Image 1 (cartoon, one colour):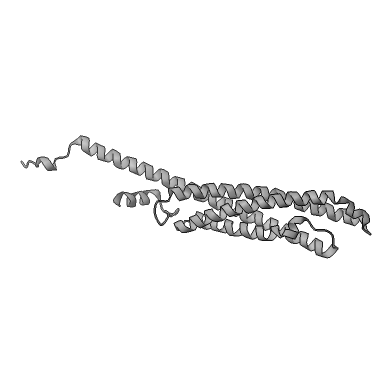
Image 2: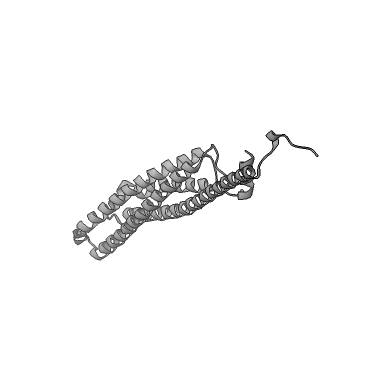
Length: 215
């Protein structure tokens, strides 16, 4: 009968403690993996909504600009400032980067997307102020159509422009909410990221947990 040295003998209590420690590490890792996956899915969905909303704002800006050029009626202030153009471009870039981050990429891109989302929230807040001021000015200048040769057409065009400007205002509020939400999710994802690369969402939890345990 072979007797193991005392230094090589492992008690059942020690083996149980080691197993419980590995189980806690696995549970913690799986929880972080699920949190990352959830955040990335939200980033992708909100990024798509941000892009679609930006395209609508861009389309409305182009239509209002065409109406201004064709009928020579006073355009909303938001059109003069060009907000539907440069604001939409910023939202498109921010939404595209958010979708890229949701697909799983490097830490630098996550931080870049976070910075752009913060800038987009500031741009959206600026657009809200411009659109609200534009609507106010259009309402105060309603007497302009009284001097027009075709007051009925002028009033109709002004009503259409006010409706489009109001829609731009509403969409800008939506863009602001989305940009703030993306910034919050990006900040959480940055805190969860511990290395130079993020875990790929397409990796299975079991495989990633095995690699983590081996490391």
